[in-house]
Image 1 (cartoon, rainbow, N blue to C red):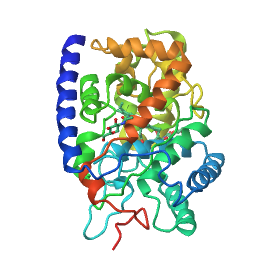
Image 2: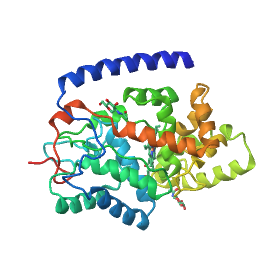
Image 3: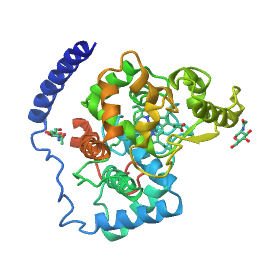
Amino acid sequence: MASFLNSKRIVFQCMILVLSITCSCLHASEPPLTLDYYKSTCPTVLDIVKKEMECAVLSDPRNAALILRLHFHDCFVQGCDGSVLLDDTITLQGEKKAPENLHALKGFRIIDRIKNRLESECPETVSCADILTIAARDAVLLVGGPYWDVPLGRKDSKTAGYELTEANIPKANDGLLSIISKFIYQGLSVTDMVALSGSHTIGMARCVNFRERIYGDFTATTGMNPLSQKRLSSLSSVCSPDSKSDQNVSALDYVTPNLFDNSYYHILLKGEGLINSDQELYSSVLAVETKRLVQKYAENAIAFFEQFSESMVKLGNITNPETHANGEVRKNCRFVNT
Ligand code: HEM
Ligand SMILES: *[C@@H]1O[C@H](CO)[C@@H](O)[C@H](O)[C@H]1NC(C)=O
Ligand SMILES: *[C@@H]1O[C@H](CO)[C@@H](O)[C@H](O)[C@H]1NC(C)=O
């Protein structure tokens, strides 16, 4: 199995290599992302984002999770280009109402607030895609996670990808191979996938996304131990078998729901992962490499933080060359400039 995945990965990586060679020839003038992109045009950008994120996370730690997830959903659809932030208009179908995003994405007003402040400080300079990337880093840091430097210089898209959202965003009940292939498709590795899934150490999921899991193999993966049975009954009281409780929520990491730590992986070791895709990393019969990584990050929080930081830079680096060449800096993150 592992060697099958490896060869599949190598094929994909070669494809990506070939593509990126072609792309860099076509768009040779497009500069890569850099750490000092706004050094002369908006030197206070990092301070402003940080201040606003401090207020947002202080008022509700869930806001950290909302912004982190927004960034992920942005980058997996057309690259990190702020496409997820666009509202529906007569001429544009946004991504917000795509089934995987509807009722699931929040935090847009936090981005609006940061954008407003930046527009008065340095008008028409900082892209919404960059704001979201910096805000996601600050979000993680503010709830106890690692720091990493954020390469900047993204452009905002003039289009959104409603259908691509359905195709690219991993779903709660996707199997392990499906999830792996969605990450490989973006140029991310199995290791990136396991580390980035550690984001589920914060935030909430709705019952509609974990009902199949708790009425499915939850008891089996926990080995029927009494504490896990208690956990299961408390989940069942929030999430009834009927659809009335669809929008009821539970913490993805019930041990330390507002702390960015490695307890998500400890929960997987106990077989108590809240959504199917989480527990699959450890319990799937196909989980060889992913199981080893879950064990490693459970044992070693520093190794998790280091890999998470590295993988977040890779996530933030996903680029659609088309957007990058034809993109803009939006004045309002919800609308393409007129
Ligand atoms: C590996 C595949 C993944 C799957 C299948 C998945 C799926 C989900 C689902 C179903 C939810 C609950 C949403 C809801 O019920 O409203 C969720 C929440 C969340 N996801 Fe993921 N996710 C994945 C990877 C990621 C990655 C890579 C990140 C960030 C880099 C991330 C960040 C989050 C966060 C922070 C939340 C909590 C959001 C909140 O509190 O509203 N996820 N995810
Ligand atoms: C939603 O969760 C609450 C507990 O948090 C529970 O009392 C209520 O019955 C749930 N709603 C449904 C429709 O199951
Ligand atoms: C980011 O992407 C560019 C090509 O788009 C690539 O040259 C560079 O190595 C990538 N950097 C990282 C850290 O993945």
